[in-house]
Length: 347
Image: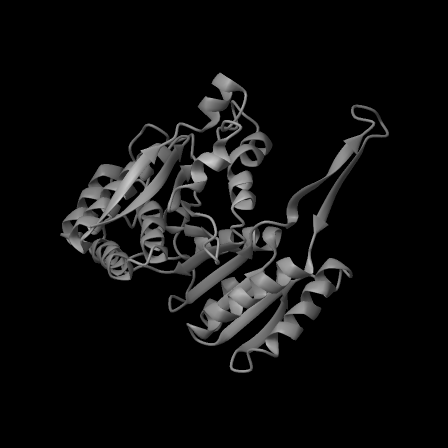
């Protein structure tokens, strides 16, 4: 029997609950599919930081390298640890350390879920550059605490980085509806974003079958609200992709349905899968977190591992229960109730 080794990082808050839910579903799908998932849990979190002074140990990246995939629940507890510390101490080092340069987030309405828009026939795949750009971490502060204090944050765009994310986006568009929208702000950012546009046009020559559109970030934000059905694959920089995918989550009914994958496309290192709703300290330990985004992320992990049939069965189970009204209203159904329903639909 094929066995996949999975690193589980439940993290903080509701991350622990939804990770347990997703893990139950993934293992059930594996059993049905004739393969096995062997999970090892790591306590890396804000609580771990408060105990040790670090979000993960110095050899954390090398420890994770041997796994077939990483599953992350949620990271963050801002009342105890600043988000800038937790993010740069765990999530970003994993993304960069394993060259997970493609962040993939699907946005569509599940059956039975009521979104805030008049339109409901959209199916958008947002692809966010995940390792450089505005989140490179280059910069610093001088004259701290004085009236002359200066803070500099430098966005770094490399030709290799832009080329690879654009090629990845074009390949995804080819596998879907052959439409790609590239998002920049090149009218205002005349160096980095004009560079992005130029590279996109060069790469587009290799994909004559894909219809390419160019949008400024503000125009794309409006289009996702006013005409989401007109969009297929969206490719954007780290910051712009982060913003647009929050809009995507909103129009698909909320963060409880927002799944994601951090992909290393050449598979030279493990990829990481996570719901993007965060740790939600306000509802942690109440047992009411919606695990659907976490389970959907688990399905994306199964697909990445090559278990496409199992992934499709998980998604079918999710769609079956939402069509019955389970997990479609925030706070109505408990985490355990939704999980049991998915398991029942799966089996």
